[in-house]
Length: 222
Image (cartoon, rainbow, N blue to C red):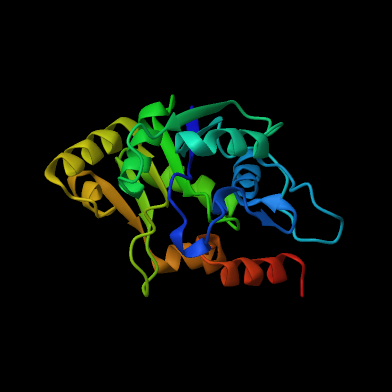
């Protein structure tokens, strides 16, 4: 059994007052776009617009990490997603993305969890599926392009091992999202492998209103 873990508990400070996890991107909440891609579903948007490639799910279930005040809106956004949804609600908000990954991994029923940030609406489901094979026999498989740092929020982790490593890092006071990885048996999916399987858009983050506008222009072919 494999789990898709969507991390959505951040405060979205660069996005403004609204919660970017449920901000509409061409009519579809951002978190729903991520979930649709993992579930193998088409985005429910008008004909002619960009769609996730409908097909088989790449995971067996979803875990959503969020703050308590986000849960109702995200639940509405994910209504009818077609996969079982579990919740990993932050008891202590604002501990950073490492805590969100830890909580999501703790809630994952499967051995391995594909962690994806809620602000990666163009995650490539076919590429994400290959990360499970990369992680087999290891505790993690993490992509890294030559000109970027590790893509820790689009990676596969052995859920229990990663949660334990996050616990230890948080206990030490380490908040850097990369720290738990160094305690694990991990493989790096390098630049050549990434480019052979997908393109850089799979890692695109939407952090600001300007980036949302750019994403909408891409979706709508403007």
